[in-house]
Amino acid sequence: MNPQQENPYAAPSSHVSDHVSQEEGFLCDPPNLVSAGRGISWISEGWALFKDNPGTWIGMIAVYFVISLVLGMLPLVNLLLALVGPVFMGGLMLGAHAAAQGDGVEFSHLFAGFREYFGKLVMVAVIYFVGLIIIMVGVGLFFGLGAGFMSGQSPMASGAGIMTVLTGVLVALLLIVPWAMAIWFAPALIVLNELAPLDAMKLSFRGCLKNFMPFLVFSVVLLILAVLAAIPLFLGFLALVPVMILATYTSYRDIFIDQSAR
Picture (cartoon, rainbow, N blue to C red):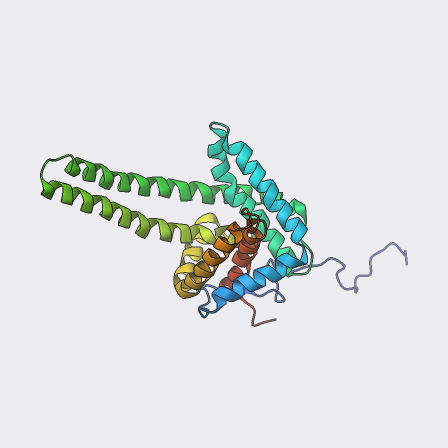
């Protein structure tokens, strides 16, 4: 037999696996409900991933900050910066996943979202900002109406104007917070589970809404850490920002991945 000829009875030499293997778990739909205390665990688990390779994470965040600062000063180009935010986040989620799987994060992960998932991630940004503009236009109508009332001479008209403006602020909060929930996990769901942009945003919203209490704890702890990070000339944010990104990944795993098969 020719030694170069393949053995028809040999096992396949190539590695074949699903996008999310049994080792890693399966995407949950509906999302998992976790305890409020997990909001603290997400941060501690994010810190554990960060301290394994702090230099790379700080370097990526520093470069992203410089890119944002430079492009943000250029007219028209700063609008494009808003569209690629989810693209950078997608790359960072890939880096976080690599670190969690023991493969190690690399600086190139910062730009990984520009390769395979660019279109989907930009579409998330487009959908998000179109919705944000619609919300802002609606809120602007409240402010305009309130200003019209307050231009009147009577105290009753001024009171009605103030109430209208406050109603506009309340409406803005009630709409912007859920809209932000829709984009929070969307990059991770796209790059790690290959969901379509709208499907990723819907599932992200449901996951955040279902886990309101752990996210409340998560937000309060982050606020306290942000105050502490600001004390040494804001240098603490060099660590806090990557930890927050890694905590977003650990919360994604907690809420959306069924790891019972591991």
